[in-house]
Length: 461
Image (cartoon, rainbow, N blue to C red; front, side, top):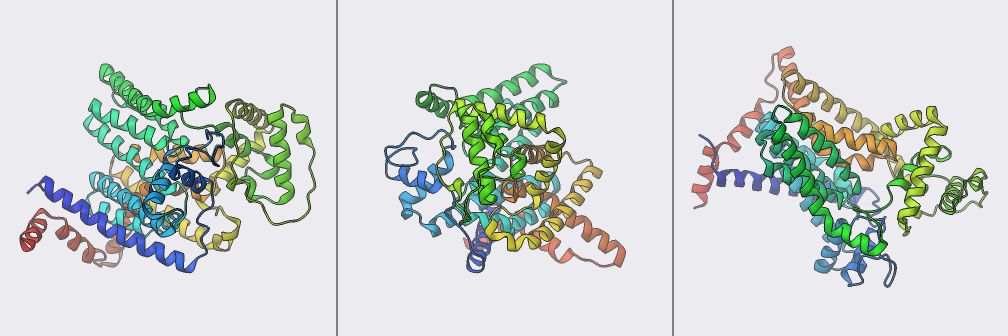
């Protein structure tokens, strides 16, 4: 018997409620046991000004911001309006809701590709994932971006299956939404448009219609913010500036591609001197190190830094010159940043947990690779899952990377990890003649069967 629409919605509500409870519980444990720097970026300051009616600025009466995407500060501002400014509990609960919606999307994708057991285990695994839960406590864009990024992948799976033009339009609109959280997502637009052309290559007219629909929907969704940026700067800025600066900062050999608040005082002073030289158009000045007295680190990333369009272009050109002048060093640094993307802790204050994170990620990613190999063996099309993950890893390997930036890939990796666990259990059963996992499989099948859902509804009535 095929589940009806109301039964499917009930399943999704159950998954949401369970994952919300688990995420709140894990986050509360982390908050009680680990020091968490919650307001660590300018997002909260911008949100405060938005909530007070000053606009998208870093300080009242200040210059309109073009170096940050708007949606996460707007999300925080809405929470401030409801629960009070800088309300840590309100932000945590709201971001736990975002994470629970992400878990629902994980359940959808896992179920569609691998079955209900994998979908359910993947959603629960995400809800329990400690790194993801840690960022639910912080005033950073990871929870919102993870939801938007996962929504793009889920919509792409639906579009690739149905091949309907409206489905490709949904993909384009969600790419724009994710870009308004973090501009890096805008790179998914040409990537997935090209994939649509390739996927529908045997139907050329439909292929071009799909790619065009995706593109038009993305541009329409971006146009209001791009128009605002044009009015502010007189330049065409789709979302925000800063891409050229990120490429420049991530390829500085003196700092090994780290962000300026991850390095020591002398290296930071050197970076500031080079940055000033690029802006002034005089890169000769960057050849000299500037000694500074020893003092506590100043986390410059927490302070507003205006990056105009011409300055961003100058940083892009300077980054290219740096990379071309050190080709071998750049290639080696890119490889190291790829490692940082999966394993390296961002905050210097949290480096005490580095060994634990390395062990956890090694296990998590190892089992996920096992699941990916199993999907390939079973000829299950997982290209739509893995391509955005590769894209995000490559972009951060080219700019700057720490484990924080891999958080949006956790939903996809939990699906593969669940498949890998399924393979491990099966092999253990074959090797030891045991029925490991059956005690979980049967209750899951019963819980998500249409008959069980209907009987539950009858009992409530």
